[in-house]
Amino acid sequence: MERPDLKQSLTRLLGPGEPEVGCDACFDYLDRYVELELAGTDADAGVPGLRAHLAGCPACREEYESLRALVGGEQAL
Amino acid sequence: MSAAAATVTVVETAAESPAPLRPVKSLDANSRRWLDELRRPETARQEAIERLHALLLRAAHFEVARRRPGLPHLRGNELEDIALEAADDALVSVLRRLDDFRGDSRFTTWAYKFALYEAAVKLRRREWQGRELPLEPEDWTLFSDTAPTPEREAELRELVGELKRAVGETLTPHQRTVLVAVALNGVPIDVLAERLDTTRGALYKTLHDARTKLRRHLAGRGLAIDPTTEEGT
Image (cartoon, rainbow over all chains, first blue to last red; front, side):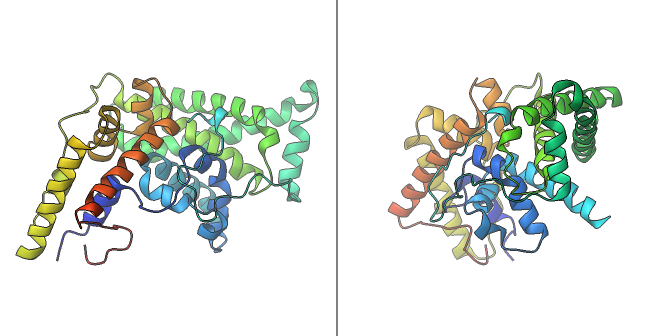
């Protein structure tokens, strides 16, 4: 089987290859996106271009993962 | 990007780009209370500001704890200082941007992101403090493993060869620096932004332009690849 992370490596180098927001818009809409996800609704439709940006920007992805973990953890309490 | 100066910037217009800021929605009771208390006159809002700072410090501690395994050389008091500084800076940003809160999320979720951002940026910068940034040579080891079949291996070799050529020949020196540092050599984009005296948003735009050039180069040679949809790779 081919190494599973080749797709990830290509995305890291070539980006998501689809329309995406920039880092500033990502920050502006991140709270909305995370709450839509945690509510089980279609966050990608709610904030177009943000999912693609998270695939292409490691720093924004880290901050997304932190916010999701923090808010998701509180909701689980 | 700075949390204080974040503005909507669409790198490449999405089919449906995020909607412009809308009127404030009907807020949940807790968010409404936060806003009401933080908008009181200075002397009357002190208690709310202290509660907000505690909330932001909790988020900063959360981020520090998540990253702590990757920062073994930092002592506990250094990490505490970073968390406190992140909470302080986030408090300034939240209060400055209070009118930007539109009720698209709970107030606490909106506020948390400022503290997480400040803590993450400070920790990434601290991690790279005093280190020379690996701007070159290009680290292509991500693509060095063999493929399952000789045919696929040949395809990958051709793809990587074209990518290397395109990085060297089609990108501007600045685009090449940003792409190699961030996308190949793993330098955090905000660390690079600080060293180059620019912003994260500006560097991401450069990275996006470089990626677009590489994709076009591959497509022009019949090597178009879409890692978001390709299966089996």
